[in-house]
Image 1 (cartoon, rainbow, N blue to C red):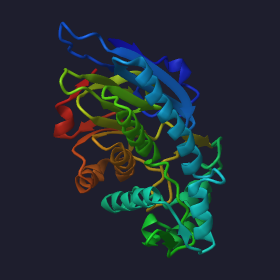
Image 2: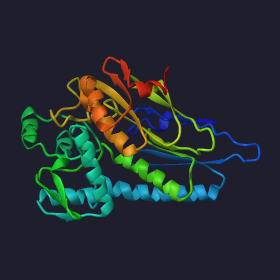
Image 3: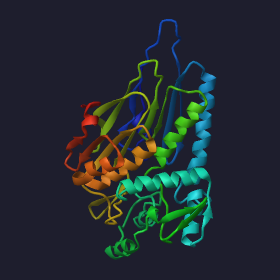
Image 4: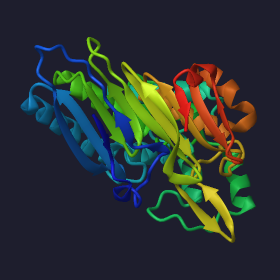
Amino acid sequence: MMFRTPLNKLKNLSIPSILVWFTLALTQSACTAQPVETKAQMLVFGTLVQITTYTHNKTQAEKAIHAVETRFQQFHHEWHAWEKGGIVSKMNQAIQQQQPIQIADSVKEFILKSQQLAKQSDYLFDPGIGTLIALWGFHSEHWQGPPPSATQIAHWLKSRPSIADLYFKDNLLYSRNSDVSLDFGGNAKGLALDIAIQELRAEGIENAVVNIGGDMRAIGHKNGRDVWAIGIQDPSDPQRALAEVDLSGDLSIVTSGTYQRYFEWQGQRFSHILNPNSGYPATGLVSVTVIHPDATTADAAATALLIAGPQHWREIARKMGIQEVLVIDENGQIQQTKAMEKRTKLL
């Protein structure tokens, strides 16, 4: 069974570079009824979220999807970088005021994981750079420039706030640098994918795919033959796929691209993916696709590798333990790891 998401429904949203296109093949024995496909979609995180399950109990599937939707609406409010009243806003306010803040175990766990991923990436992925993101105007719904001045960027670099500045005493969060502003745009969608799969499995769902604006995590029944064929967008023509990869088992596929969110100023394009070491948008690569079992890790790695650029992405991938990567540079050239080549078909 093959089904596609109409691209015209996505063109006004933030669309990562995985083309929303996949195939599920399940082998069924002669005495087993065909699983029922249940689909739902919602608008969360400023993009389209799609959930598709395959079960023998439609009521069970609908209950599971509702549980995911409820978690997602809560997640959007709590983790939105500039949503007042959410946990990120509260943490940033406490950091700015140089006050400790009590946080839940789940939030602490995510921050610790993000710190580990940031360290492994040599802090190319760094959720502590919210003030830099705001300086470039990417904390608003419309990105239009002008870019910040060289003086403003130099001033930011002098402080160089980082998630590494945070530390804990039990569940009290402290910061050594009051300029830290948390923004988990680099791995929050990955966390949301992982949470969604946890919710579905808690409700007994074992065959499903969750798609957040093109970033996906798919699970399939191990007693059958499961193949999810996913197309990767051509950055120069996002309506077209330039490669197809096959997923099986439990895997995530996440793409970061400089062509997804940007503004143009005086004939120059400025991407929302910023290099914390320079203060300027990443250059050299236009798209990075990562496959990994953990979507949070895949999301962070895709960001870090894109910032690392053509010369250093393999080194950062090794440090982050990422084996399956496909990158596209500004000239349209494709490079892959050997592990990725085994599952990729160029179109």
